[in-house]
Amino acid sequence: MKYMLLIHVDPAAAPRTPADGEKMSKEYFAFTQSIADSGELVAGDALEGPETATAVRVRNGKRTTTDGPYAETKEHLGGYYIVDVKDLDRALELAALIPDASSAGVEVRPVREM
Image (tube, rainbow, N blue to C red):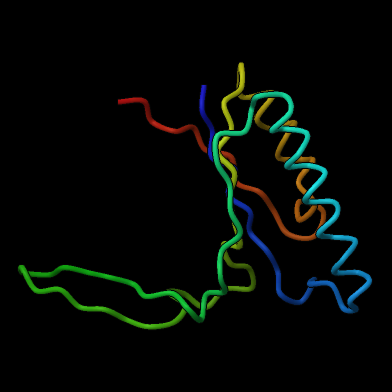
């Protein structure tokens, strides 16, 4: 079953030094490599910051756009993985291994099969 692991990050908990940033990058690389090697990785990417986002709405047939973050929140969506695993328990296990799970949170949602 496929699950999306939505990584919510807290900018206040971002690495403070280049060494901390390199450590975090290595942790992400190791995690990504482990789920690639196990065959569970379907896709995954980091996202640019919320200040680069554009929200699109259509009301009465008219499209409007709003630049910047959609909502004022402490955390924002920083990246995702899509994994194909045997069950929810395995998806939760993987989510707990994502480096940012220790400072913010990872939302686990099943991908709807069509």
